Image (cartoon, rainbow over all chains, first blue to last red; front, top):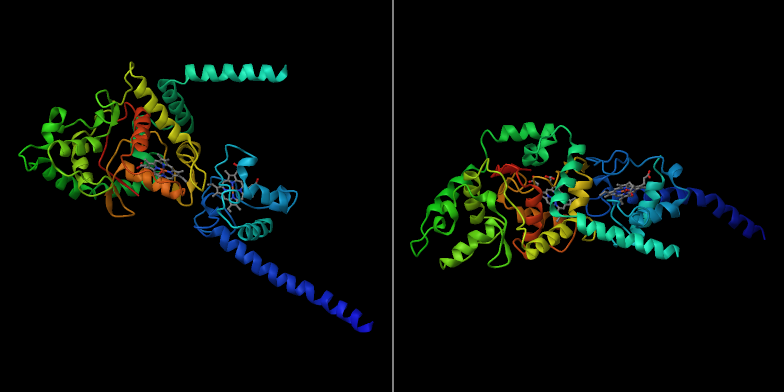
Length: 115
Length: 277
């Protein structure tokens, strides 16, 4: 009984630490995919943090959590922006498989974190 | 009832669209759009491509033009143009006015073959008529010959028109226009996405040029590659950029595209050969 409680305690204690470090490495991976020319290449059109040579076709990406209700909504836009604006110049990253589902999730995590 | 009304309305719109969307009104609309976007430009300014709208790039371009990097190609082109074919004939024998100051008349609709003749395709037609192997279209010798022909045509105004009586010519124009506006490739861009909707904006560090004036200045020496390059090669590059199927230089599709763009640019002065990033 005690050991179960203790075990519960220890996982509870460990989890936040573990999560923070995965979150951070996910953020790093998401950033890399977003910036890389042959992946997201989001910098082609958006100012993002310290990214070099950004274009200005789309708006600067910041305060994202105030612009979208939740991650799912953000993901839907990145996956297929043409759904929301038929005239958009933004490529449909999910629909046209420009990014894999895993890459898309990492990009969403990263973009969501921008404030 | 409501749906019925909607349908009637749609039909009406389509009808008006087809009646009114003549090439001449297409051209008016495109020019009015750019005029609003770049009120500081005259029509002739569009012959300078992105340099007409990017003052910083323009000043480095003007410095480069002091010793134009296309000069060698121009000299070689002059020599090649004057060289006799093995049968003793010359390029001059194939063209009106011996091939001098005529680039503004291309591309044109050829009633005999019911097809669009571009200057590049006319050069190869000339070679074939004289039992010479055709030149490859993207780079090399053809760019040199075209550089010379363009140079003798500097200042002449583009004369691309659509013969009023030819429905086939009109259809070719319409196909070129459709190509220009159709989204394609994995990245889902049309030519218009970049060169109409986003002209003047930056994609990474590259400013996007207006489509008006795209046909004025070929061939161009590309500073990025250090080579002379043709208009159709540039079409290929842009299609590669958006991961689309790359239609080959001088394919029917690209000749139609050139016809459309050249019709938009009717009246603009030619200023090739040129230098571009």
